[in-house]
Amino acid sequence: MNERGRFAPSPTGELHLGNARSALLSWLWARKGGGGYAIRIEDIDTPRVRPGMAEQQLAELAWLGLDWDGPPVFQSQRTGLYEDALQKLGDHVYECFCSRAEIAAASAPHGDEGPRYPGTCANLTRAQRAERRRTRSPSLRLRVPPGPLAFHDEIAADQSFDTRQLVGDFVLRRGDGIFAYQLAVVVDDGAMAITQVLRGADLLASTARQILLHRLLGQREPRWAHVPLVIAASGERLSKRDKSLSLSALRKRGVDPRQVVAHLARLSGLAARDACEARELLGGFSLPKLPLRGPTRIDALPY
Ligand code: GLU
Image (cartoon, rainbow, N blue to C red):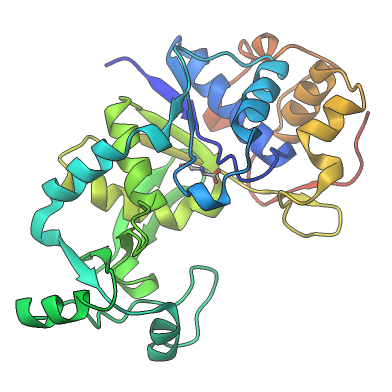
């Protein structure tokens, strides 16, 4: 089977150096073996999308020297596929009428992943559902089987997450009709024949949810590689608000993109001079050899 990687930015904020590093490494991983590479714009959460941001992100990826096969895919144009997937999931999906406040009140204190859904609406009768639909449009949730799901990650090694314990039955389509990231990403990775996914380690726990969906949809799951996050000198996560570390700020400042590429390469343990083209890194690239353990701190920019 042909290998195929991808980068899938959300056009809700500017790309920063952490996103750029994931883009570069995912491109190197795919292109090193002569594989395909796709860009997918994850603009499914339309209220959060910033006008013009997708075009800006694409221009910045090209500025970095990355290339991709075919036109970029926009999730907002693919809702029919997500609808079909929901049909296919059939009885694994159920309607939920709970508000956020009700869920927060019914669950134990929670961490980064938000409150765990306690399964309140998992067993409503047909009559109860019909009654509640009169006052609220339901979200759709996946029935998650109990127990841990283990998988291998090419950077983070062996992983195991108990999705039911962590988040419970998770949302596939929100009450406002917007499809959830977890469903869209799995449907698209399947439909786009993606065989390898490299992205930030903030999505490690989500991977167990995505593997579950791949299996229920009868899809072959990709290989996974999660890179540690890039953090600011303060120790804080680079957020899309850290303007000085955004690609657009660097570009506006007239920084040579080859310096950015070399910097990202060195931050990932690849040998690179002060400036280089992305494709010059292909020769020395080997994913298993990258010394990526903890978060990568950016103390000062070398440009
Ligand atoms: N769109 C997601 C993000 O920008 C990434 C999704 C993925 O790579 O699976 O965080």
